Length: 286
Image (cartoon, rainbow, N blue to C red; front, side):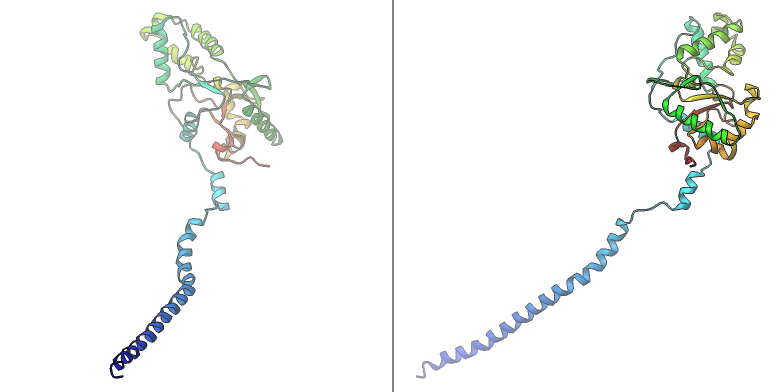
């Protein structure tokens, strides 16, 4: 019997360890459950604070929108606006046509023209819309009619005198004016007719260099005012007031702003070009 007693002691010695192990396991289990229950509360707050700025979409305020609508454009910005756009339904003119029949004379004409700021333009490549006796790109034609109606409501009578001109049309005009000076091709090539050339290019672009090739440029007349004095007319005042507000409402900007040098011809107050209301940053009035 005494031999068995140590085994009983061994058994009784193990039992307390098993009871202690169960308690530890139970404590760990409780800790896990409590931690699980508390986990959403402790993580949710920092997650929201990080993600909230990323989910916010900036919304333009009314003041910011009005500032864009009332944006003032300088004469230089008007010029850059047109020179930097590619207008739809047009094809860039890569090379000007022969003007005099003399390569040397033609090269000199082009060199002088580009020194003045003339640039090769684009020519209309699609169908044009007839409007008030001329042809224009359809968007420009619709905008012209809207602008003319708005002017009439203010007692201003705008008349359209010129729209699209092909390269061939411009060639005829330029040759006619150049021939009227009496300059010979030899004198032109040798630089002896520069005064005559400049006098022609004051008012006429060499073929390939006219904005009218695009079908987006218009020339206007104000009844009761001599054409060349359009800039002094009530029509011009209506168009230019408040940084060309009335013209810009319909997508038109001045082709040749006054305070900009080397534009090609002398500034032509009667010529405007349609670039669209998205670029002019002025919303049409209802």
